[in-house]
Image (cartoon, rainbow, N blue to C red):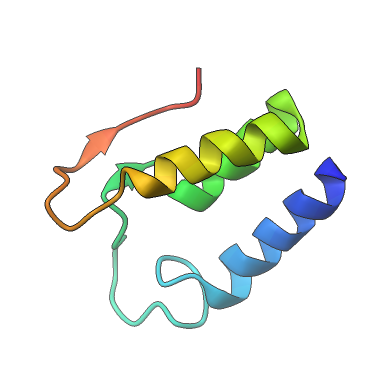
Length: 76
């Protein structure tokens, strides 16, 4: 299950993401977090497994909003 999720996230990052995919029209990142939410979720799934990793990724995405200041939030 984890491998499938990581493959899907990799597909999203390569083809659909506004930061790194084909829809990235400007240089630099549009994400307010480092690493990006998709990379964070990918790391969490590979480290903690599918369920806890997705939980952590969704929690991270819910904290993302336009008024969030840029900051580093690594997976611990």
